[in-house]
Image 1 (tube, helix red, strand yellow):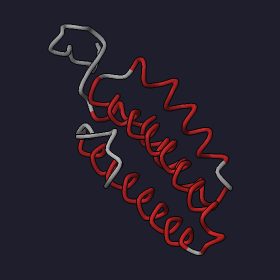
Image 2 (cartoon, rainbow, N blue to C red; image 1 turned 135 degrees about the vertical axis):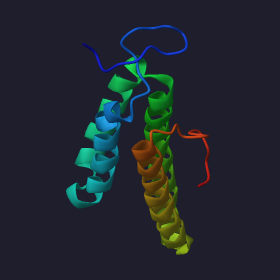
Image 3 (cartoon, one colour; image 1 turned 180 degrees about the horizontal axis):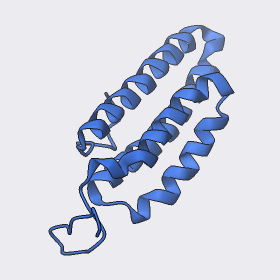
Image 4 (cartoon, rainbow, N blue to C red; image 1 turned 120 degrees about the vertical axis):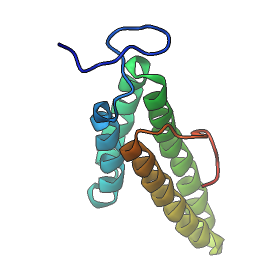
Length: 126
């Protein structure tokens, strides 16, 4: 007997069960652990997100899409902040990037725990 429920498209084996979100939750945790590991776990997380997004149900794909966007956009923000740190404004950009990163991860984890999709995973804001 299978716990999976057919989706509206009728595909067997794919469910909207929030319990199948363990991989996405692990990726969010790896992103947070990246602060302690110098980014190593973040790189592992982005690889996992790219690998898992193809086979995930739509509501879970939005989380993988969010994780991929958070990785690349935070990398961009950090690069810009680091370059501009020489003129001191970069430190504010780095602080804003840090806050943005944490907020996007926490919001993603909250939505994931409820079994909800991310409303706009490509959003540049919060």
